Every structure is written in C-alpha cells, then in structure tokens.
Length: 303
Image (cartoon, rainbow, N blue to C red; front, side, top):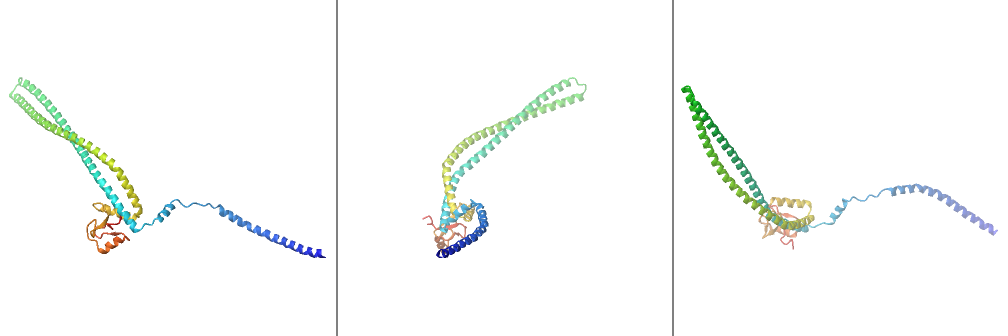
C-alpha cells in the first residue's frame, strides 16, 4: 500500500513537468520574430562622424580671454611693423631700379628716333644731290639747244629754263648744307644719349645686385616674422582680425594697436579719459580711440 501511495505523487509531478514543457515551447516560437528584428538592427552600418567636425571640436577647447586676445593683437602689431620696416628698406631699391629701367627705355627710344631722323636726312641729301645732277644735265641740254634757236622767243624760253635750273641747284645746295648741319647736331645728341644710356645701364646693374643682396638677407627674417604673425593671428577671431587690417590700411604709419602714453593715444596723441584708461588697464574689453579709431592697450600688456 505504501508503494502505491508513493507512485501517484510521482506521476503528478511528471505530469506537471510535461505541462510546463508544453507551455514553454510555444513561448520560444513567439520569440522567433524578435530575433529577426535584432538581426536587422545589427545589419545597419555604423557611419563614422564627418572629418570636418573634428576641427570645430578642437577650436571649442581654446577659449581665449580678452586679455590674451589684446596681447596677441599687440604682438601682431609689433611683428607687422617690423615687416613694414623691412619692406620699406627693400621698397626704395625696387623703385630706383624701376626708374632706371624707365629711363633706359626712354633713352633707347630717343636714340632710335634720332637715328631714324639722321637716316631720313641722309636720304634727303642724296635726293638733293641727284636733283643737282639732273639740273646740270638740263642746263647742258638747254645750252646746246640755245645755239640752234630760230627766233628770240625760243631763246628767251631756253634762257629762263636755264635760270630756273640754276636756282634749283642753289636751293638744293642750301638744303644740303641745312641737312648736314642737322645731322651733325643730331649725331651729337645721339652720342650724349648713348653715353647716358651706358651710365644708366651700369647703375642699373649695381642697383639690381644690391637689391638681390638685400632680398637674400631680409627674406629669411621676413618669412620668420610672417610665420609668427600667422601664429599670433590664430588666437584672434576673424572679426577682430578684419577690423585690425582695416585700421592698418587706413593709418599712414600702419599702426592699428597702440599703447596709452602719458595719458594720450599713441597713434593720434589725443587725450584719453581717466575712466577709459582704467577700463584699458582692466583688459576686459576691446577699447578704441575716440578720435583715430585705433585699438588702445595697456603699456604693460606684454609684461
């Protein structure tokens, strides 16, 4: 009897396990669609962020203060002033070289024109000499005809022709003398111009060598300063750089950023109010001169 009592509960437990298995199997089937959804999500490509976003993130890390920007502006002004000095020293020589080149072109053109005029005068002299020969031939002809004239009318006509040809010879000789004098004067001018041309060419050679030497000496320094200028400009935003360049272009001496010297603007030397000087020393905002528009900074900004 005891064995029968034990077998029944065992069969009930087994029956429950079978029921649980039956209920679990459909649940697993129901989950099958979820796997497909998961596979679709995994199949989506993961695109990397665009490369142009990285520089923006890098720029956002550097948030320079107004004091740092003012200091960078002042340093940029000092660098650009040194570059201007180099270009001024170099800039005088190119102007001299250009003037010499223009003068050489002018002298060459002048010599060419006078040479052409001399040739034209020579041609005119040659033509006048030929005219004299022709007139002499006509005089001989008319003289021979006058010996065989039949009446006074023919004789007078031939006499007038002979006189006319003699006048033509005299006029041609006069023109030859004038042309010869002009040729002598023009040749003197050509010689003087040629001497000046040779001197200018010699000066040009010297100036060109001098310019090449200065360019070779200052080019490295200028390149170094331009590199420093670009580094200083990175700290300043584009709007402020544009204002700086505009002020520099309008100023005669190229000064856009100046210090306050003896309570006055270092650019136009007008008085700066005490309250404004205090704000300049605090370096919390960009302040410009009320008179000339230059950017004002504290004299101790570099320190």
